Amino acid sequence: MDNRRKFLKKASFALAGAVLAPNLLSSCGESVAAKKHIGLQLYSLRDDIKDLGIKKILETVAKMGYVNLEAAGYGDGKLYGLAPAELKKIIDDLGMKITSSHLGRQISDDRDADMNWWNVAIEAHNAAGMKYMVMPWSPLQGEGATIDNVKRYGEYFSQIGLLTAAASIKFGYHNHAFEFENKIDGTPVYDLLVENTSPDHVLFQNDVYWTQKGGYNPVDYLKKYPKRIQLLHIKDEEAIGASGTMDFKTIFETAYANGVKDWYVEVERYIGTPQEDVKQSYDFLNKAEYVK
Image (cartoon, rainbow, N blue to C red):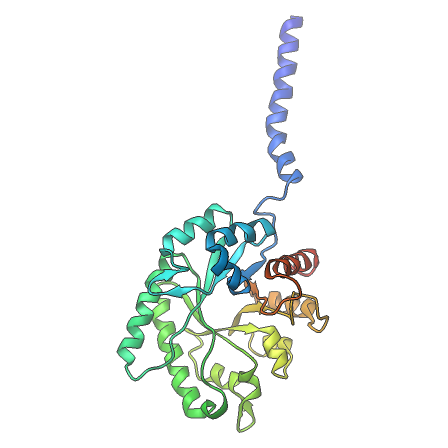
């Protein structure tokens, strides 16, 4: 009888341990699921990617803690010289996701060629599992800042967005400062682009730093276009938080209230090395209580 009691007691402890162990393990270490949804535009490490290769940099970025990536290396059906599915597997295996990509083709005299270029790009980004394809520049500045050009590019963007939608990918446009600095009859080009693109097929990725550099408060634009601005670039003079001039708390609070899910750190100028500043940016946002 005593032996039976001892056996049952040991079995009970073993069962309790089996139930508790996963909870203890997840509480002792930071799991991928528990990490904040902090994204990175890989352009931030463009020189290191050239020198060290994309795989090495992806391993480094994963160790920093980033989980959500945006590419800036598309060409001829490949991403960073790799087949899209191959890049996706590398990133998935590292516990990250690649959800967006910067790429672009300006309007040419051959619209069929333009659309064929986009069709090839869409096929590649679909194979990579992308959610967004974002055009990061347009010639709508200086002499190019005319209402006719805005309408041309508005129609072009809407046509591209119709193509990407067929692959369940959203098409967007990313701003610099010039879309705010250049005005037509007193209205910023940015606003005119919003007005002249299909709300169903074109979203906007607001670069909060360039918006502020262009003379406007990014929070005001998030409130003005809560349904059109669906992505953000979180940027500062150098590493995120270094300048003290960006009101990231209000930016994030407003973006979350609007339902923004994906955003990406972008570091273009550096205080230290690119990797140091990208890591510093992650640490700043990871410690910020207003970042989810």
